[in-house]
Image 1 (cartoon, rainbow, N blue to C red):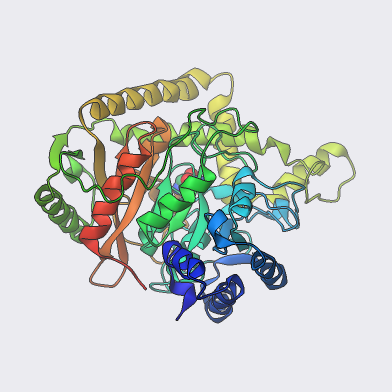
Image 2: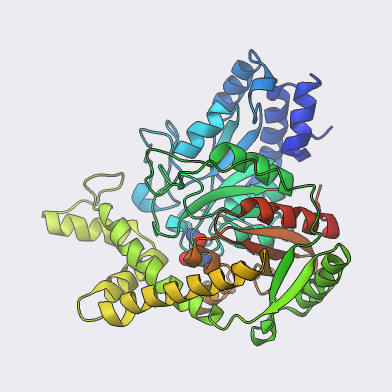
Amino acid sequence: MELNKKSISELKELYSNGSVKPSEVVRACLDAISNKDTEIGAFLEVMPEDVLRRARELEKESPEEMPLYGIPIAVKDNICTIGSRTTCASKILEGYVPPYNATVVERLLDAGAIIIGKTNMDEFAMGSSTENSAYQITKNPWNMEFAPGGSSGGSAAAVAASMVPVALGSDTGGSIRQPASLCGVVGLKGTYGRVSRYGLVAFASSLDQIGPITRTVDDSAIVMNVISGRDPFDATTIPDEPGDFRAGLGRGVEQLKIAVPVDLERWDIDAELKDILKDTIEKLEEAGAKIEPVNFPDMDASIACYYVIANAEASSNLARYDGVKYAFRAEAETLDEMYERTRGEGFGDEVKRRILLGTYVLSAGYYDAYYNKAQQVRAMICSRFEAIFSANDLVMLPTVPGPSFRLGERIDNPIEMYLSDIFTTPANIAGIPAISVPAGLTRKGLPLGIQLMAGYTQEEKLLQGAAMLEKIYKFNKG
Ligand code: GLN
């Protein structure tokens, strides 16, 4: 029956009619991991005994009460899990075991999910290829010479290779949606504050959001129903109850107004992706949606704005890794030398680059020119989106300008790597929800993704539109 290939909704069905048990499902996933992951490298840690023990405990409970009963889930390694290491794929957190669970992890466990392991990522979620991990490379399951994207590359690869039906990622500037697009799976980042960040190791606190990577849109909604909502441990969570994320799924797109940037030509978008976009517009119109061309001149500014704000916040957030409080400490004669050597040896090159850039833009002489300016640009981008969403329900555009790239191809060119975040960073800057839906394969067999964005807290509409895209593309690796 290949239980590892089943979606969450299929597994729920099988559990409720009693045809499978959690231990059989996790065994199928563990088998898939042992068959495939030596080559793919999606996981940093899997604990088979704990997983099977939890599955057997669940077998004493009833599936009806628990929305994620017996669902195996992989968790990105920057999300705290009691008793298993949380390293952010950094040497500076090597062997760190948190004394608490992230709120999302608590909620998943209460809902009956089984945490199967921790996934590889770019160190501290900084990157777009997962090559910045201090531990290992993750390969794209569609072609092992290509990158899975990043920074949640391990999570996306694990779901794409059917090692788990769902994985959590985190998205600061695209790190859920970009790897989802490159691996042919669904990746959702909710409205800022929709999902608690308590227990997510901070990269850029005003941008970070945890979200699901799944093989279907419905599964994404099912997981959001469990992990969203106010959390007293995170004062930035949205106080209102989110409602049912599945509510809009079967509704179609009749009368929905979908804005498409008119000037997409300005960006260097892959030709096959452009064709898909054109075709999608036609199909959405046939389904009753109204396509509205919109101007989006500020999009170009989003990358610069993002890399100033994200790095500024990162330089402050990462100050805590000093060799005193957390895992790694370098040997030294004096305290100052210990700080320097710990940070010098513990952080990788990309993280150091970000800390230096962030410290620079926050320094007294440059604060106004860079940090303050970036905040102004952020306000401008937010008001542009407000105007767009006052007249439209959704915005549609590619997730990334093209398909995946070869491992090693971009790693020495950070600017090129940063520029590929052009379409994902605006949603983080504006704090609005966005989703990447797999749209098909290039002639060379690499996945392409289309992105939808919705107004503040409008996830229901976002998922409504995404469900229609899924119906149009009929894409599922199986
Ligand atoms: N690629 C972006 C960066 O390197 C986004 C990372 C993220 O969303 N965590 O900062």
